[in-house]
Amino acid sequence: MNALVELALVLAVLAMAVKLLLLNFWRAVLFLFPASVRVRPEAPADRMELPPGLAALAGQLGALGFVPLGRHVEKPRFQKGTRSYDFAHPGERVFATLHLAPDGHPRLYLLTPLAPEGFVLTAGYKRPGFEVPGRYRSGSLVEAPPERLLQAHQERLQGLTPAEHFTWEERLQAGQAWYQGPGQREIRRQNLQGLLWTVVALAIVAGLFLGGGRSA
Image 1 (spheres, rainbow, N blue to C red):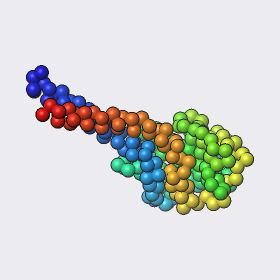
Image 2 (image 1 turned 45 degrees about the horizontal axis):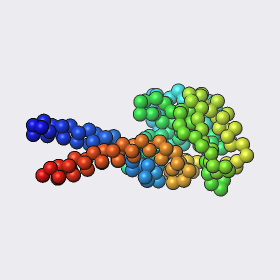
Image 3 (image 1 turned 180 degrees about the horizontal axis):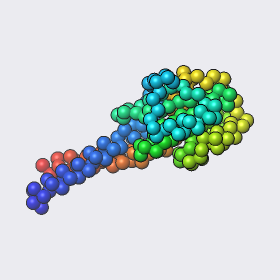
Image 4 (image 1 turned 45 degrees about the vertical axis):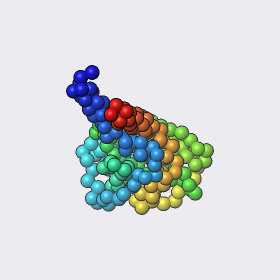
């Protein structure tokens, strides 16, 4: 084969491998180390500055009795992180969090920490769900309005004991505890494909260099 053609093929394959790594390496890290995600406070309630895409859902939460808590960022390694906007309904013992999906679509999920440990999580968008008896329940009700989502969340809480405090500090602690505990299984399910693509990309790079070494 012509040396220039062979070089062009090698560079094209290498470029594809690098692109795969850029797209998936952070997901592989997240699969291996889900507890590495950091939940950081960013602004209190009076400086939340909701984006326009979340205003309608925030208004519906307010009508249900939720009060704003603040804005936080959930940051995996090698990513800029996701801004989330937190609310609480102490009477119902539930947190509500709004954020924008990568495609700009508004998302809402409800979270209740349990005593002495555990969580109940109900999302208004498609996400993995499973149960650890007495400690964890998660599920989704796709595109359900906040009122219906709250009803479903309350049903999932039956037979379980919610935590007592629903302050912003407790919300931040709950978010970090989720990544360090029951959330790890969901994180790994969501990012398994990223791990596999990263392995493929690394295998391609290794094959190119090892093959080049043998040719030499």
